[in-house]
Length: 347
Image (cartoon, rainbow, N blue to C red; front, side):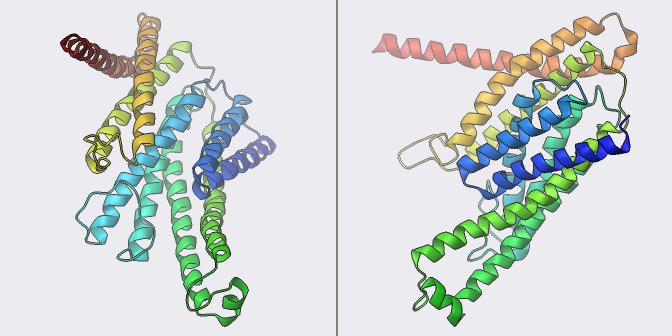
């Protein structure tokens, strides 16, 4: 049980690291976003390690849940945006404002995308923290609501700044400052506005996400249980990694159908979605055997302990998911090697 001073200190620290990580993830270009994921993962793990025996799998599982939430949120938000904009083509991401893209659909799609990211992050934290925190289930709801609000604030600020951007062209004063002549801005103006349109909404959404996620984790820790048994930790990790491995495989399959292949290629692996597809594939291949090993370990530990029935159920889920995916990937690997041998012998 945390006292009031410890709660405030923990909340401030979690809010700070979450703000810094989420702001960089939401606002920056791809290298800055990757640094933001690293700050978010390491910062929360190091903060929670002082209060709970959080597994080191957090460092692998948390960013992968963020990736899954990002992909799922893009699919859900992008296709809802297309429906609202009367566009029949499938989409794998929320599109920014532009011709045929009104602000209302962009705002709704961004909010849904944030809710999906929050659900995946909350689910991952629930499964990893639940053996030691009695209120861990609240993380799913609070994360979903908090990140939905963060992405909604990002979209709202972005819409307002876009209108301000258009207003600059009609302003004689700003036209003189940025060298806009005849509706054509200088390169300095374009560069400034591009970075400003990313940074400002990212900072605002980072503040909202930091407050919500920091409060969620502190709320979970208010009612700590006794030290968790190793079987329950293994069962939770096995179930979480197995579920994420399956979801990664499903999302990868959906992306292969949504993204068209590059010119002259037959597979969508050779498209703009290649980095995400590669991460989903590698993550699923790595997490499947981890789920199987932890599920089997937990089943062996709880075999003769009826009081750990909940741990047994989670262990079975992890073992079944991890075992089935591991068998599938092993079969695909054997078939691939056989095809290579047949092609090599034929040539």
